[in-house]
Length: 399
Ligand SMILES: *Cc1c(COP(=O)(O)O)cnc(C)c1O
Image 1 (cartoon, rainbow, N blue to C red):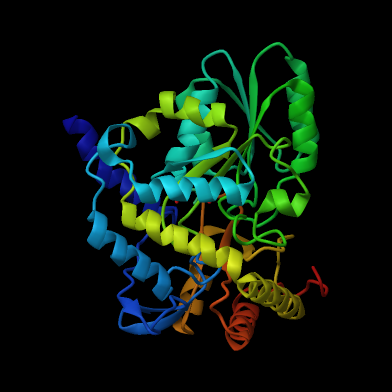
Image 2 (image 1 turned 135 degrees about the vertical axis):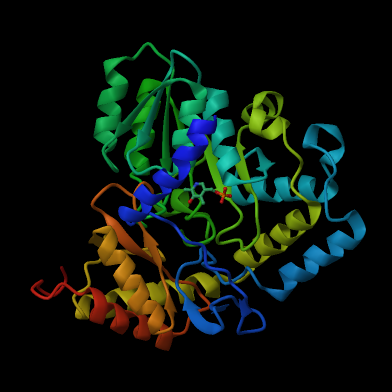
């Protein structure tokens, strides 16, 4: 133990030398009354292109009001797990509303998306069974697979045929396919129709984590399934998170009643933890109402994404295939993304530098995220600044 403790400074120095040290910035406040698009950092105001507050709901006054009203009635904490005394009316109503929103029999609230993914994967599979995950799946799906103790295989990104072949190799064993709906660091969509066909043929579970799709993608914000024309029967297990487009906190699993009941009985990351505070659930209910009532947020966001891509193409930025508000600019090396991030920050723009192990080696990138709270002028300012720091000089237009 003592020797291990001595090894830590050395391990930290190795991270630093490899430019893999991560640093937190403290957001000291916000420049506007109801938005978090302009953050105060180090005494300066920066335009924030690194949050997942896609619809601009995180500081909406109606969410804050719902939260404080519920806090006055129910208190700040839930005081127990859902199975003991912690499950309240706000939780119950939110679950009903999420089930209705996703067109499923039931939904089950979790404290975080990380815990929801652990629950689903480790409860539905176990030792001797098989899990197939997209290579670029979120870390929480991978950790769920590790916890399950099943045989994990990661298929090439968005390659549904590779997943189907892997299932066909060993048709006797119970299997589960898991994928992000919208990939968190690339912004592209999973090939859900082909994955669903492969899962059906092999009688395997298909689990879709739509953390970045729900609220944002699809004509009415019902996520990647809506965008791909998939029904609840096509994707039996849907996971959503509430801390991104919904501007609140928490997560849920939606599916058939038996699936939800089984999770309540068996999922350790559901059973052995304190229930989410009711005020958080109350704020989420308000967010869900706004997501459904205010289509303009999605329309506006889509227009900003288009504007950014048009402008970024003109200035020869190496853009990905994403049509979502997640717009990666892959630069490759750790040094390059850190230098670009510093340069942008000097111009008043806050953009995330994403490095391994969050993304594969050699694919370090700026992860630009756009929100409905940005202005056209800010999108143009960002594209121009990126053009100055990150354009590929020799690349033809549209590359
Ligand atoms: C953010 C994220 C999660 C984790 O959700 P939290 O509620 O933040 O724990 C899970 N899956 C994906 C794809 C995510 O992007």
